[in-house]
Length: 221
Image 1 (cartoon, rainbow, N blue to C red):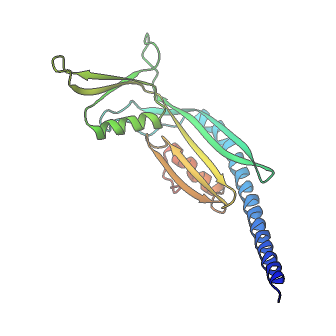
Image 2 (image 1 turned 60 degrees about the vertical axis):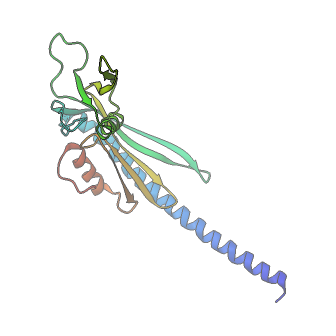
Image 3 (image 1 turned 135 degrees about the vertical axis):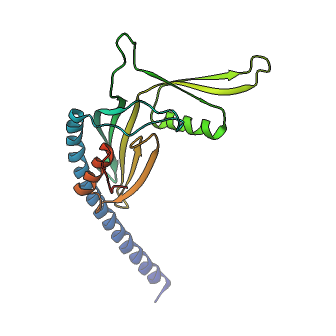
């Protein structure tokens, strides 16, 4: 066999492999989009029910010592975005977002939402509080308390609204046929991530997610 024929054979083998790879990517994309549509329909309906029920939220605390008042979950909203992948329009992400607020409104005559206050003076505690503020998108003011004579930093005080935001965001990976699921402030002011394949992400799995959101025993994670 001439060298040219050897090159032709190599090229044909490579083209066949690339064609097989593209077929697999197309199959994964179709399966992922089908799972996205399942999530779409579920996420369209779920907020309508939860906005009526306003389920209780998990106990919250920024420092692990100062509890927030009993909270409820309100203002559930669904959002989705699309992108172009290999010339086709596909889902970029699907997300739910909602608010965590006190079950009892502010006392009569009070202005705005109730305020909370935590004080920290050790780096690990400071990091924990700042992380939880970010996760819950909690509006706050930060103030340093210093010794009046030495100006030495004694503590850092955070005065904050007792209102937070929670969310679930599902980001599909069409090439791999899977979803990255990110839960923020669901069951506490922390971020938890997990991954589902398109075969796993069905109505039964979304039911488990809904149970997790409302605080019932759940196998979603």
